[in-house]
Length: 110
Image 1 (tube, helix red, strand yellow):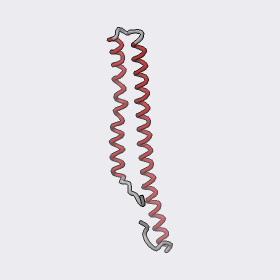
Image 2 (cartoon, one colour):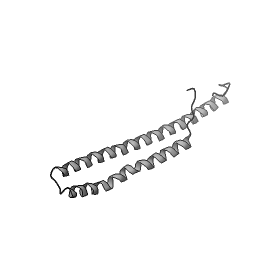
Image 3 (tube, helix red, strand yellow):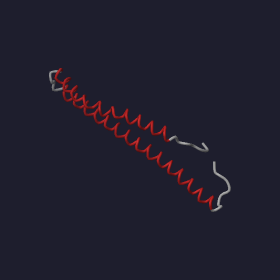
Image 4 (cartoon, helix red, strand yellow):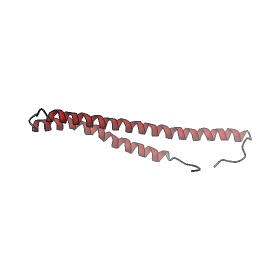
């Protein structure tokens, strides 16, 4: 690829949509605790089933929290990369303009 152009508007829209979708993971965890208690009660609070249900809930809670953390990190990284790209473009153009004003360049780069 000889050149690229990142649409900051599209990146922003994608990051916002992904962030909104990721919020669902945390919201999904809240009612799970009640479901585990209800399932344990429906099983007569069996000594074998209750620990298994609790273990499953803790595992899923950890997995969902981990997914949420990773998604947030990815979104932060994508936003930072886009900002660096835009700032790099601005810096490059400022350098080019400065050099052009001093007669150090002959044509606009592609």
